[in-house]
Length: 429
Image (tube, rainbow, N blue to C red; front, top):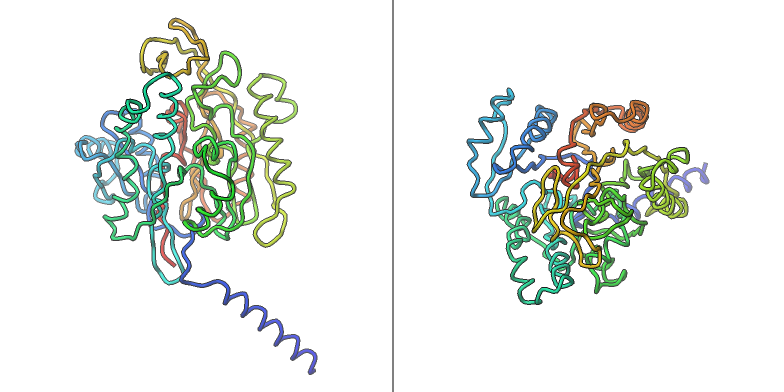
């Protein structure tokens, strides 16, 4: 009997010590499946093609998670509200915010990174949005004077302030950081682990080291366990680089939310191309090679508690691309792309036809309080068998959440998806 009492006492002491190490005053970046206060959605009057996506996401979240629409101060909200009313949505149920912002359609990347703690408090981290500095270096590579390049990209300054402006509206303290880091490249499990695309992190922070980036992420996000993974998908590539001759992609260059996601604290989803499919197209072959590299990393990786991860391979939708003719300047349309988007060493000439890739992926999904919003590709001819497999995976992972399938192909052509378009605001504990 004494032995049993001693054993129970020992267990209680060990558990108490573990609890003491979890200081409730410490802030951390919560996982996406933790309770949410609201979802931020952007809209722009000059981009009415995104209105249907906004309405579909708002309709999917109605009744379970509040929606806050964000636009630039120059936009006329009545234009968008009238559209929502035409779609049968009650605009009185939504919040509409106006802040000086250039790219409201990319709130995932430029919006606030919300931190919470166990005392019911919330803060915001304001990282540098990566593209401004990257684009400045690109212009210098094209031969533009450094001072002029800095001036040319200054119109992006408003994007750098979006995080802080939205935080100030809510009266939240802001932690500032000089690290270039977009929200789409932040993938955490809420327990201290973070997935980082090594190539992308160094691409946007070329003068940093792993050690310095890890220290900054620990300071700002409260993470302490770092898993550096391989390259992203070809479809999410940088337009100034040819990965496969004749094919281009206007993506992020490798955000994690396009190819590798935490499904829960110990389960990782990885975009996948099967052996049978990899030889059908050079894009498939390259994606298979990249995902295999990350898979090998994940097989050896452990979580913050020293346990191996459960890894689930999620099929990619069928490849989508269209011909775009190269034209002068910075033009962009469904059938054209400007010569200025390309680096000098690419040898691109006006009149060339390049195959433009859609950034299609089932892993660009959003978890909300009681639903999982997923992109569907059946209506554009993608494999029903693949989508059925995706449905099985997510139904098993989230049996208590409803799966809502949404057409996000408009955003795919602009290098993103559902997750890029949305930004969750966590509830305080």
